[in-house]
Length: 433
Image (cartoon, rainbow, N blue to C red; front, side):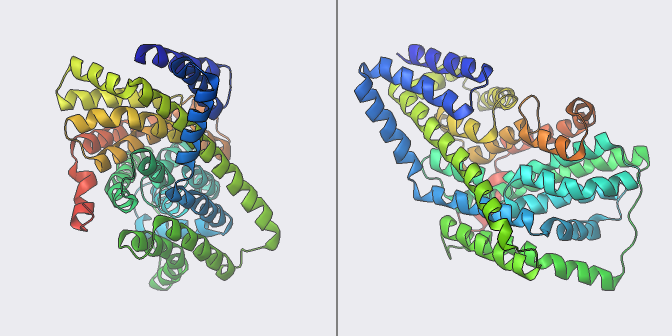
């Protein structure tokens, strides 16, 4: 039965994906078809599928997602990006290719605050592009830097992707996942900076001007309120002052205060912000519901156990198994968005990695990291498309300057995969594990 159901799910999904059907519908239709065949009657299949859909969508933890999405939208409208860029330039503006490093660090900061890689790529990229053009940076290189550094916000908390992983992995602690994402996310950003440093020196990109103490103090004061969001929200979740859902609501309230303080709040912007939040949340929740049906029928058919046995029949060496998973996830990432990939493949591969003792938190950071690479990989990489759209540089011209960054990011992925301490040391230090 596992083979029959797997065939229906896989080829049904691929055919619908090729026809341009939205991913959520492409997951739901084959799942319903497989349920009808497996459970023999449409009534039983419909009831079982609906139960799986609404059970997972009604999780209290998922209430955090619309609030974090709304806070990210408010941050994007709130004039935060320029202040963070000035602060990043203050910190690393004396390095060769200072604007490239500023772009990377700004994406790390803004992505962590907004929780959206696409919002980071568009907001930061939109401000950085004219500055980089003015100082003679190649547009292709600037776009590549913006694209490869934007996904860091999906690892550095708060992260909606890690919240999704928490739900689909059976309730893994969100606070622990958040803390575990810090070091890998920072390493991603640092690896991009190292590569940008060597490229900047080779091409002779300029060093930023020295900033006086008075100006540095003014820039820091302007940026601190936005940076404080990370401390207040993530710190409160980590140390148990409030739940992730409560923290997400606090993030919205804090974002509103920032908009009022920065005088960027306008009543007429509210409908657009709420509509954008509703669209994003609706898409995510529909994906969760559709993937829940697929996970449900896969569990009934025993597909996760069958895949685990198949992989373990090839080898029981954990290092080789990890390499197989890395290659598979990188391949999947080229044509599937991050959220559905995490929702679908977590329940499939989690039993496999548990078999050789991989920690569930370590695996969550690993799979998120691997799928984030897919977000900047054509043909489906939505982060790459966003960076290309904001800079008006065709994607085919961005791929070549991105290649050195891919090498450095893949090196960090291998480190994250094979050195659990990079993900687990900080949560253990804080007593979360």
